[in-house]
Amino acid sequence: MGHPGVAGGRFGKERIRPALSAERIETGIAPGAGMRFHDSASRKKPERQFSPIMKPTIKPNIPNFSSGPCAKRPGYSLSALSTDILGRSHRSGLGKARLAKSIAETRAILGIPAEYRVGIVPASDTGAFEMAMWTMLGARPVDAFCWESFGEGWVTDLQKQLKLPNVRVFKAAYGRLPDLAQADPTHDIVFLWNGTTGGAKVPNGDWIRDDRQGLTLCDATSAVYAMDIPWRKLDVVTFSWQKVLGGEAAHGMLVLSPRAVERLTTYKPAWPLPKIFRLTKGGVLMEEIFEGSTINTPSMLANEDYLDALAWAKAIGGLPALLRRSQDNLATFEAFVATHPWIHFLADRPEIRSNTSVCFTVDLTPDQVKKMVQLLAAEKAAFDCGAYKDAPPGLRFWCGATVERTDIEKLLPWLEWAYEEAKKA
Image 1 (tube, rainbow, N blue to C red):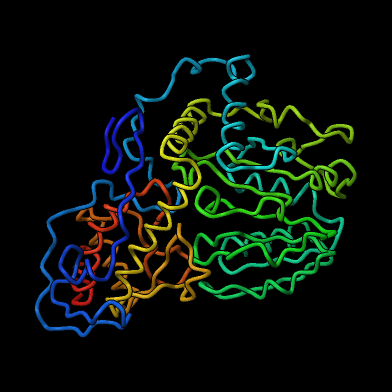
Image 2: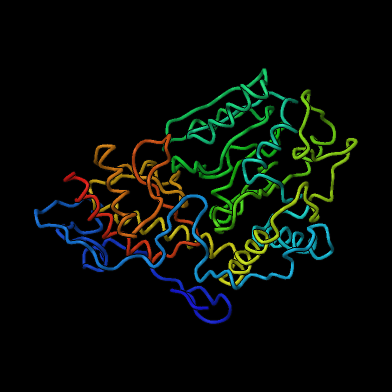
């Protein structure tokens, strides 16, 4: 089952290609028709000539750049999935074994500490994070950090749904980060590792105290498998299958530290909990959830799809290869932005720039940006690349590990063409 950049075996060994450089753009390997470039070392924007931008002819092999559900792994085929579990109970020996395998492979690839629990829970990342908030918060004051729409959603839950009395909110605009140093180690902390709709990520976990008294609750759904996660800095981590590994939706992963387990078993919230949120029974953790027995009925087909993605990740070199692929994808866009004056990263500080949900502003009106997105889709050069509805008008491209860098390189001439066409509109 071959695909670009991979050869041999079921998935093959990853072939590492050098990042797209300004020199390659300058010599015509990448887009640049009608542009004059300065030496790449100067990092200056180019001067525009008045020659027309020709419509490209080569398109990405896989033009799927959605930030969720995300592109399937290279070479993906439904025929590769095992089907012997279909039509069987998820509580059968076979069903539990398959779910437990997903948990074990997740732990192994991500390097999650042995003392942390890992479980499959309902309702994707949203369900997993809601479960954590509703079962653990309220014991201490809460510091919430947000800089885009999903983080703001968690703040709404804290203030208007849970109605917690002691919540401090630290907020920043899209593409920025709030002052993380304001975190109080005696408080619980709620934050995202990567802002999927704003293109800004937390650069590291140095701001989180090792001797903290509160819990850290981290929504890491567009960061896990693409960014270095310091697990022991975090007490609750949630993510979904549909992001970096391109899995299917509706299932979430919940990772708990021993401190989080202690909170669950010693603290009882003042509000009632629906069944799908309950992680304890009689004050005791329901360990079976973290051994392959799910709270409600999972999709066994979606689980097989996730196992296929995990096997691919392992075959290409595991977490280091996944991180490198995503970072190389971002570097390809960075080389393009450095030589094109009309496109800008929404997160202008490189150290906080997301390498998965990469967000841009463009020197066009909102209507012209929509036209640009429509042109790219109509030409089948890029699907689902418009900015999130609540974010500033612009473009957003998924750059996780399942996206091939060669497809981004083929996309770039289309970006320049679509920009010029939309500007005429």
